[in-house]
Amino acid sequence: MDNTSFSDILRKLTHPMLLPLARFLGGLGLTPNMLSLIGMVAYVVAGFVLATGYPIACAVILMIFGPLDVLDGTLARDSGQETSYGAFLDATLDRYEEFFIYAGLLYYLLNGLGKGPLSAILVLSALSGSFFVSYTRAKAEALGFECSVGILTRFERIVLFIVAIVTGWIDAILAVIAILSFVTTFQRMAIVAKQAKGHEKS
Image 1 (cartoon, rainbow, N blue to C red):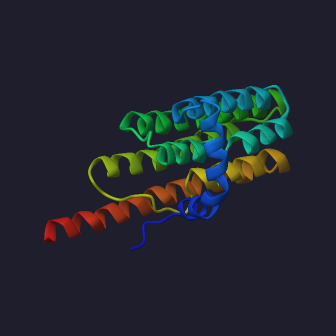
Image 2 (image 1 turned 90 degrees about the horizontal axis):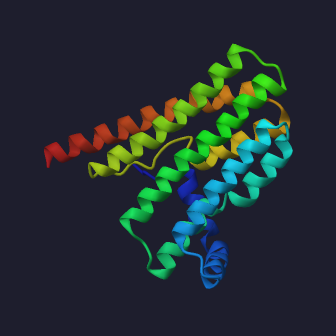
Image 3 (image 1 turned 60 degrees about the vertical axis):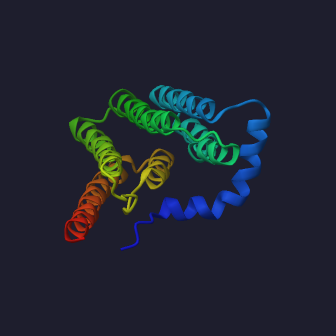
């Protein structure tokens, strides 16, 4: 079974365009870890902006700084700065980034739009589903399995998040994120189970 996700394919397709930008940022003295940290700060700002009632501004920030999630890895590979700690830091900061934008969304829904418990539950479900998707990959790869497959990886989740706050279809899209995140989690459980059986037979 092919373990390649849509975001992996997109990363390969955009690599020729992102590489010059990564090299430019590296020429400015920025390291991959610095790009990861800058990205997290941008997400914190985006969450705050959303919480204060400016969803379009939040979307713009995410669209501008979202590519840093790819650029830090691109720069690390191109400059020979790939490290285990860098990969760990990037993955950890990614989880903080999602937390901050969902926290901002929750505040915006409850205080800005006057939404009720259902919206809060949908935010929690979408965030929890996102974390489960990330955890299954991290745990699987720590055990030596390949596990990047899935219908809804981080890239797709962020795109849907942006669409939700721009269009105002927030509850509906949160439900989609939650459902497809849990589907992705089970997809990854299935692929790891298949690999594990293959290892036992070999």
